[in-house]
Amino acid sequence: MKTNIKFKSSVFSLVFSEPDVLRELYCALKGISLPDDVPVIINTLDDVLFMDQINDISFEIGGTLVVLVEHQSTINPNIALRLLMYIARVYEKTVGDRNIYSTKKMLIPQPEFFVLYNGTSPCPDETVIKLSEMFKSVEPLGLPEKAHPVLELEVKVLNINEGKNEAIVQRCRYLAQYSAFVAKVREFEKVGDNLQEAMQKAVVFCRSHDILKELLEQNATEVLNMLMTEWNLEDAKQVWFEEGREEEREYVLNLLDQGLSVDEIKQRLKQIPKKPHGNRSQGDTLNADD
Image 1 (cartoon, rainbow, N blue to C red):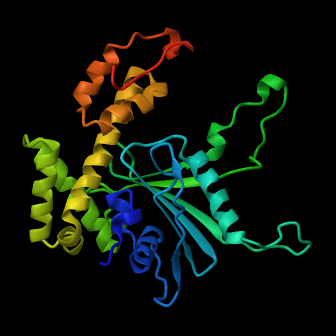
Image 2 (image 1 turned 90 degrees about the vertical axis):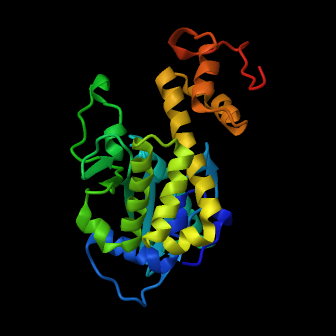
Image 3 (image 1 turned 30 degrees about the vertical axis):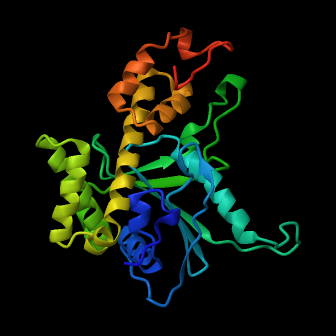
């Protein structure tokens, strides 16, 4: 597998960074076959939203489909809104210089949206998150609810942990190997290794068992760095969600960048006086050097 790590923010996007691999992934997700000569063009945007890419993977198939795939270890109930914003940017890029005010109808690729979940919390094999589930009720205005929302976006969420959706996972060898690699990290963690040791042992094991072997041989250090960053960020997000202090995320990220552990960050947060309803007054400031 030829890889370019310069623009990859996660191991998942690094694994699925080639058109042929994405074709195989889409066919596995849909349970179909596509001819090898159908072009697959990656169009993932490089913009940054908060602390990671707006979307992990975006690609076109044959100029008629645009597929957005998000990889998550926690389920985000707002993912449909995030992907709505993202697909608008993708269409803006696709349309380019064409005149959207023209009297001639413009044809655009049909969208499909997927979340591939491999977190530790229980999750069904398959579920669907809808944008309309986020809409506020109009009943307080004395208006009837619409039978069909005028704006909808559906995201299919698939659990790719080992033992889940095996038919899908086994149809895509890189998806199967990625799931096996993550499972091996967690296996070593359960027997008492710290996260870094577990990741290092998982890399050695997978290289010797032909699991993402080429990727790990060529980019072992980069993969380990990516994994540590990804998993530490997940832990950090859990910290501020548990503390009810989402507004302090930049402070937490600053501490994380300084090399503090999650436990040390929790201690720092406990030293900050809580405000009613989790809000801070205008005079309050956070300084990572305090």
